[in-house]
Amino acid sequence: MNTTNNKTTLFVAKTLESILVIGYILFEELIWNVFAKPVYQYLKSLIILEPLKKTFLQMNRYLLLTVFIFILLVAEAMGFLAGYCFIEGYFVTGMMVYAVKIPVAAFTFWLFDLTKQTLMTFSWLKTSYGWTMGMIEKLLNSAIHIYIKGRIIAIRLKVQQTLRQYFGEAGFIASVKAHYKAFKS
Image (cartoon, rainbow, N blue to C red):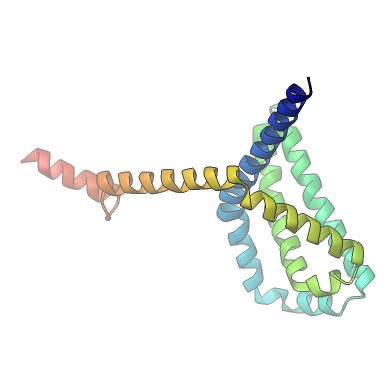
């Protein structure tokens, strides 16, 4: 009976790990790389934010923590609201809420990056941040993550190779024209 219980526990643990890895990869590949990272990079480059940078850097650490947590909670609430909309079948509303969430989350990342030294003076936040980053590191080094990430990279390379093979370096339109000219003569 004990070995059955161990097998069940191991199965549940591996299933949860797989779900976390797939969720993380989807977030990283789709949300962060495609949408949030460009918005974050754009925010970092805005000259209009210079006075805001100065304000945040000179802000009382307790007020800064309050502002940061408020913006973070707004971003997370928007994520939950978007998920709720998706579950209820309001896909367009869910996508719109999530589209608005992305700049809010990017602003939160920007604020954290800017004020990390001050925010890390709160020992509970430093501990939470360290624990979270440690868990992400464990997830990234897990065998299932390495396997799935490897498969994604292989599939992406195969798709790129196929696109180059059928559409060439010049693109789809040039490929269609070349095929048309070849069949015409």
